[in-house]
Picture 1 (cartoon, helix red, strand yellow):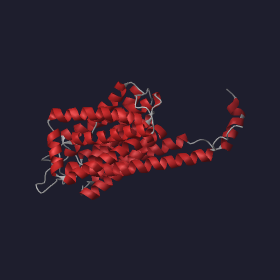
Picture 2 (tube, helix red, strand yellow):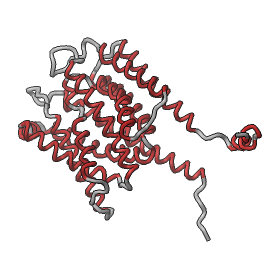
Picture 3 (tube, rainbow, N blue to C red):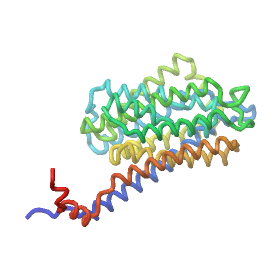
Picture 4 (cartoon, helix red, strand yellow):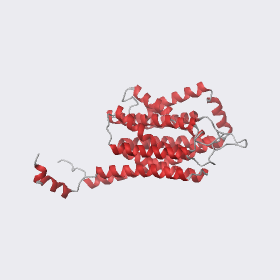
Length: 343
């Protein structure tokens, strides 16, 4: 006798619980990550008020922790460590991920500026989606992208005059800081788009993709630290400041957890739901950063933030509304209508 198929309500309830798991995981880990990231890069340590300047060392610590945990997960579940996709495809994600690490930008722009600017990655995602995934977009999508970019531009160009970076002598919207953010957006758009392509093109476990991409990132970041001569100074700094060591250890832990939640969300719900979750996370992160670190926002920045988040939430709401199925009765009426039956 065949087993009964799961009911629609059961499937829907299961998806709701999966959604709660994904949303809470991403929100908690990335909000903590954002606060710790700003603390490490912008708050001085010790009696001499020394700043930690080795952002690539943070990337290395994050990736080696994530790689070790994902390898342990694969071994514990008795799944093969063999790559599912060609190794060079993992390396592409890894290289892009290393290049888009945005911690260096925190030396020149504040965390609220950096976080809101991430919302503008819709444009590079649309560009990469067209080339990599052969996607097409509606005119409304381009309108939303324009409004988000406009809001981000207002937010960056009109900072509060008292928000000064410890690494620069002037206001925070330096050319170099903005240039770093533009580069970050381009590479980050490629990373998420290519990750989505790998999940759809191969029967790939989440841990498998994370293991190989972070393993490549470990090699690349370690090589960069050695070539720049920053490896030993970074270790010496952490050795002299135990509180910095604890901050980096916690940062690596939440970064590892966030990687699993992000990959799980992209694989289970797709890029649209992930974008909505990240929009909410960015709003919460900005509010916490302003309260925790005393960032002041100008009235122009408040207008820019309203434009950005208003556009994004409107876009997500309209897309979800267009995807809702018609009620059964309405569907039946349309199917039986003689007008609809005429070709």
